[in-house]
Image (tube, rainbow, N blue to C red; front, side, top):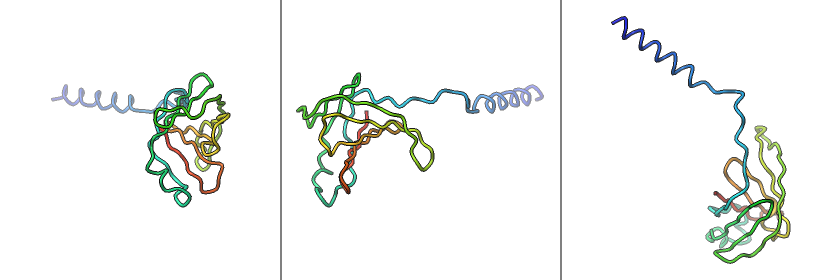
Length: 132
């Protein structure tokens, strides 16, 4: 019985110690490179409700260049740059993306965790939501 109790206490101690977060572990960097598929749209409902139903955009970001597709047709291409920023509230680190030579409705871009947001510089314009 003592052996079982000792084994239980050791197992509990190992589990407790092994589940602690490592505060010095490096944070996972948000990586914009890859192919992103549109999964949704927010805003812009008053101006054009049809865009909420048309989840047909795809964007490919590779080596500082991008290609934007609607369905399978390329509609824009160019270069992009990134900049790390701190978003308020919550001091959350995000990556701001600037796409050159792209239609205004897809500016500016923001990469937060594993989600890419391409917004609009227009008040009440749409924000397109993409996932890899």
